[in-house]
Length: 383
Image 1 (cartoon, rainbow, N blue to C red):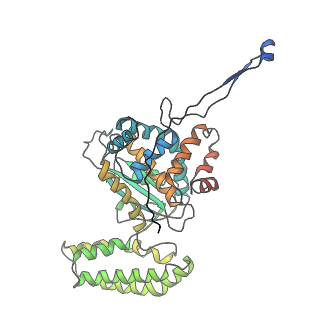
Image 2 (image 1 turned 90 degrees about the vertical axis):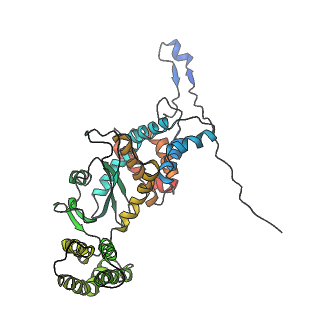
Image 3 (image 1 turned 180 degrees about the vertical axis):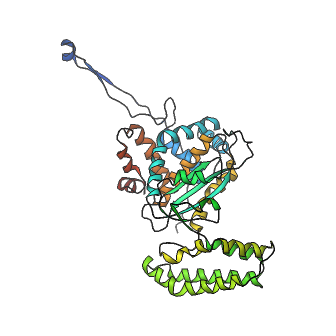
C-alpha cells in the first residue's frame, strides 16, 4: 500500500554577495602604465538598496497578480526574516517601474498603435494628492486599451489619468488608425482616427434590466440572444467567411430588429425607454461588425481585463500620488501582457530586473525588442 501527500516548503531568503577583485600587472607598473584592473560586478536594479531582482518580481506578483496590499506583504516578509516597511516597498515599486519597466511600457504602446482592431474600457480610480487642486475624493480614471484576440502579439495596456476627458484617448492612441470596440461613452465618438464598434452585450444588458421574462423588453433581449447564437456558430470561421455568414444570416435579423425598434412611440424615461434610446443612438456603431469579419459582437474582452484592476482596487483602494498610479498601470500592463503571451509573469519580471540595468538601451533602444513578451528569447526562458 502506498500513500501520497503534498509537503509545503516555505520560501527562504538568501544573501548574495558581489566581490570585485582588483589585479595589478607588475610589468605595467615598471613601465609607468596603468597597472590595476578590476572586474565589474552586475549593476543593481536599485541603487543603494538590498532589493534584488527576484525580491522585486515577487513583490509585483503579490500585489498585482494576487491583489495583496503592501501592509499584508509587510507581515509576510517579516516571516521570511526581512524587516521592510510598506513605504519602502511602495518606493521600490515606483523607482523600479520608472527606471526599467517604463521603456518596455512605451514600446508596448507603439505596438498597440500599429494594430487595426483594438478594445477599450475605463474605470474610476482615486488619487489622493492631485496636482490639479481637486479634492482627493474626485474620480480619476484608469483606461484599458488592448489588441484583439486574433493578434499574435498581444498587448494589454493600462493608462492612468486625472480625468475622463477625450485628451487621454488621443494621448494613448496618438498614431492609431482603425477600429475600436468600446461602450457608448461619447468621448470615443467623432474622432477622425477611430472607427467605433459598439457593444451588443451592453444593449442586451439594458433590455434585461428593463423588464422580466415577458413583455417588450424580453423581445429586445431575445433579438440580442439570437444574434449572439449566430456568432457562436461563426466563431471558428476565418474573418472573410465570417463576414459572408453575417451578411447572409445576421443582417436580416438586424433589419427585423431595427424595424421592430422603430415601431415604438417616444417613451418616457423608463428603463425600457432608456434601453431603446441607447440602442438607437448607437445604431451605426452597432452595425459596424457586419462589414468586417475581424470584428466581434461585444467588448467583453476588455471588460474581463479591467476586472483584475477593480479587484486590486478593493484591496489597496487608491494611489497616494500620480507617480504611484502610473507605476500601478505600468505593472499591470507588463504582467497582463506577459500572461497574454503565455509567459510566467514572475519569471519575466525577474529577468527584466536582472538584465535591463546592465543593458545600454538608452543609446541602443533596439535592444529592448528582445525583451518584449513575444520575442524568441522571452518565450524560451519565461514560458
